[in-house]
Image (cartoon, rainbow, N blue to C red; front, side):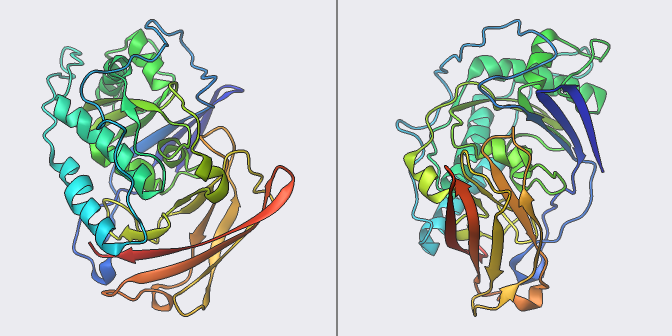
Length: 360
């Protein structure tokens, strides 16, 4: 179910009831999913000219945090063509972030926004950067503590009112102007928090624009803010943009990512929407072909260009072929992808890559 609300011509707001991914022991290397009350919303405007229903009451100039932060120079790149290196990255860098205690000091009773531990904020940042590294992007997004404090108030509002909005009314319980500002500049989740919310933003099942995923994997994302309660997250994704890596113009940003990808609910699943992003590209006439490890063409659906205004220009599609045609579990499962007729500067380009899912 999707509800679209228009706050202004430049601000599209999506409220989505998402099918949550629940941990389990599934066969074939994948884990079963079931429904829950998890919801997500993604802000829909470019981060260089954000539009919100309220005026910020805090400075909009990014504030560089002192702690927590990414390592000097950012999270190191990995060779995604190496199964062993990706497996080690998942087990030693990605997975531990999901076990960091939140230690939230606030409460919806009395409207106390509180805060979370520095370690928990670092875990959220780590998860953002981990997904970006897997996708071939620099893992150098930093944490803005000023925006995080405002996002904390937004998360409290979503939790206290048991609903999501990028334009929360002043009549809401625990309303604050700073929280409303953060709500208009953030991915929002209800039913998940912290690293689990980031995971849900990347999966983005049920969100036609894939807006949450596109903001987390935005080629120009330079910093985020995070606010969390036990069942809500506000991930500030506007402002603080950086220059896109030169490699993005040549390779684009694919999800699931090129090379080896952990087949787990913490990372990716072939049943989730597939996407390919490229700054400034025209995907209106693009097509996609997928094949298995033996070259058999697999059926796909919902192929098309996504609405602009959510990170980089993006196209998406869904794998429709039955698992019997492509799954090699418990062995690794490889897909070949070819995207054709992508217009870049008026010239048609094609992109080819492979994705190999493995059980970490």
